[in-house]
Length: 266
Length: 255
Image 1: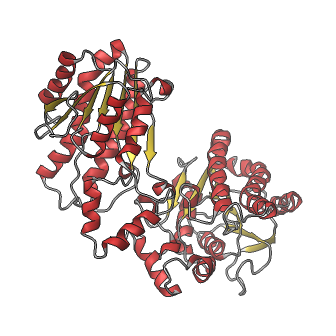
Image 2: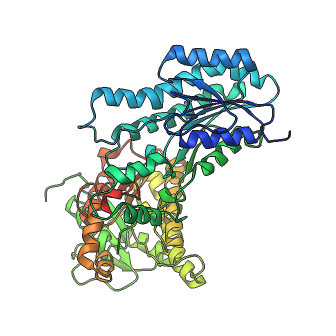
Image 3: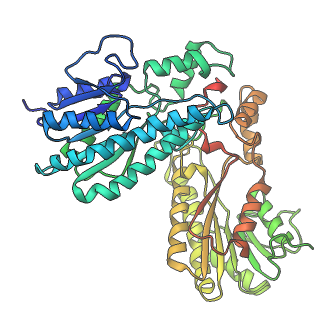
């Protein structure tokens, strides 16, 4: 049946999280075979996962886990066309308050995890290329890899590392037909964002969670938060053959937020 | 006079040196030992140092730009320093912008900078020189309702890199992009706010250094860039904004 990704095989890490689920569902809808990798069946969300993705238990920080997951895909599908590295965590602290183990955990998931899945996926992706098309790696950077939000130091640094890794891999593996891009989301409406508003995000202005949520929304030129489906739209395009010439780029998806100078309240 | 960055005997042209950031640059280059020529569309400001040569000129006009360069040659000799500071802004969206608005903003910010560089580059290519253009954080990220101004500053950034590439090794060319600098223009903005005190406090809170910039902050950067301390520095656009644009436009803690 003729989706744009029909016949392709995809692995989505963080595949049971808010954004990961939307990506998995979209890739399935477009005809891909999708492996949704996460720490547990329900991932970071409490409810039962929906959709027709194939769950793979995976801790992206463990090399043996990653090797096993890619081995499973190799045995079942024989290739990998699309790798989406959506697994990520954030530590909401300044560096003084960040312990070494928190720092290491942030880099282990966001940077080392991306390194490991790419490293073990490359041989499988070469097999996909040999079928006559490009393969596509889609990493998750952040607009915080360009400009900082306060109290997110380790997260900002880890996303900057993902940006540089994305460009480096695009240089190294472009000649093999493997494209590497990163999506850099801004404020996407997920349970993680709502938890942020309810917690550390509110404060200085003394408003309620609702006024904070509205104020932040209205700083966006688009006057809205992004949705996981918005991210899935871009993943879908970058994954497919229409994007065959797109590689080594950082795709900011933030409703115009970072296109502007800070908006003073005049 | 003690020289901070050693510009003794050098001749500098600073456009738009009558007030604000341009005046601070003129005063600083003077203090560092340079002979300075500056220009503006109006008549000579009363409080301008008597050693500074003033030329009444609109640099959007090629002949006026040539006259400014000529005045430097007649009074002091070949200029080795050019600071393209003159700039105007019109607070409008694309739809609201008239042909006259376009001509004013693009004429001064783009063509004026271009005119001055074109006049100066032949002699700089022979005798050496350093150009500093005033860009803006608005050339990288947008201020609302400043469409043509924002675009004009992006032009300045692009021209800066092109001159550095085309006219090295004898000419160095860099740009400095100010953020919110405390000038008359900014003070007027606060005065118009519904709650001026709160507006200023909000603006200050968005700066990592805890204050707005002063014209001297920009002059400090320009003085360094035109000095021999910066002899390996070319083709770059430096942001001097107290950390404003290093932070997200959203600082939820402020809400």
